[in-house]
Amino acid sequence: MIAQLSGILVLADAMDVVIDCGGVGYAVSVPISTTDIMPGVGERVTLHTVMHVREDAMQLFGFATTAEREAFKLLTSITGIGGRTALGILSAMPLADLRQYLVSGNLVALQRLPGVGRKTAERMVVELREKIIGVVPEASASAMPAMSAVADEAVAALVALGYARAVAEKSVKAVIQAEPSVAASSEDLLRRALRMATAP
Picture (cartoon, rainbow, N blue to C red):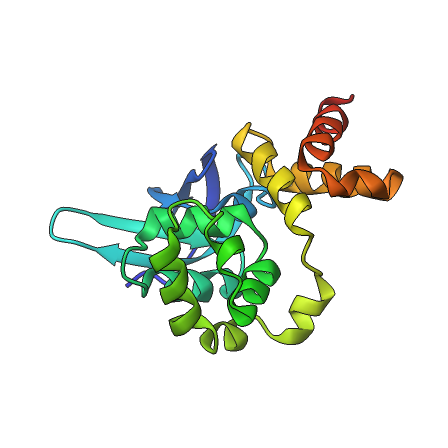
């Protein structure tokens, strides 16, 4: 099994990258959180990987941190969550937020994740509530406080519109800091964050 790849980034396209390792190009699917912090094409990159082997295909999933990789393994252990859905979940929110929602049993927040319905959210809470603590320690979670539900919705909407998650979060936080009252309305927050994200 391939647990790590180090090589030259030759292609980066949304949630799919290609890494040249000694003349062999490995296609790797990654979450947006990993894409956002990757170096430019032509530069060296290291990814922590998970390989899924099926009868009809082999697929590599890559992550910037071991915590993301372990969270991916936990997510794909849940019935109904495949590799691409797990990537979508990790792309939709920081690990600290995911930890908070699982530990607190916040089904409403979990159901906002792509590909997650009520039954899947319930299984996630029951099966991962304790396990996620070992993957994302409380100290790490407290260092990255979760945003409000309204702010989280605004970030998710910006990501859906094609903005990088880092840009979306920065824009939403900037709007809230400048005008805290706007955080009460997801529509107003999104409208202002859109202007912030597209400003030169």
